[in-house]
Image 1 (tube, rainbow, N blue to C red):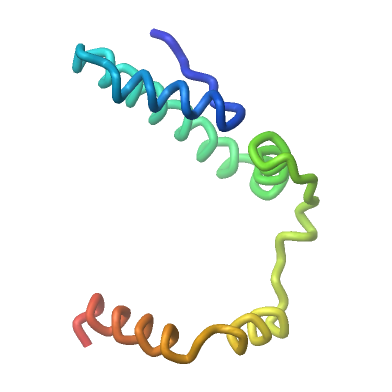
Image 2 (tube, rainbow, N blue to C red):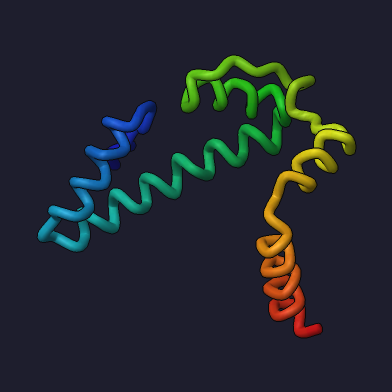
Length: 103
């Protein structure tokens, strides 16, 4: 089994190209399985090590150094961001939420 290591946009583009240009569906299935395995590895690391793992992946994939204490968003920050959103968008999201929940 080959494991696709995706560490940057070029790696991702290469995997996508391999999938889309593959004439053999089993090759595409193998690549999709590899992506699922890589994703599961990330999920498992975050479940086991929490914010520390999340900070590592942020550095690895986003080239941004954040510490776990920077992940928390205060209620004031949430309120300020909410106040910047177009009221029509908020209304649409509330309607979508109600539609999804059947209320």
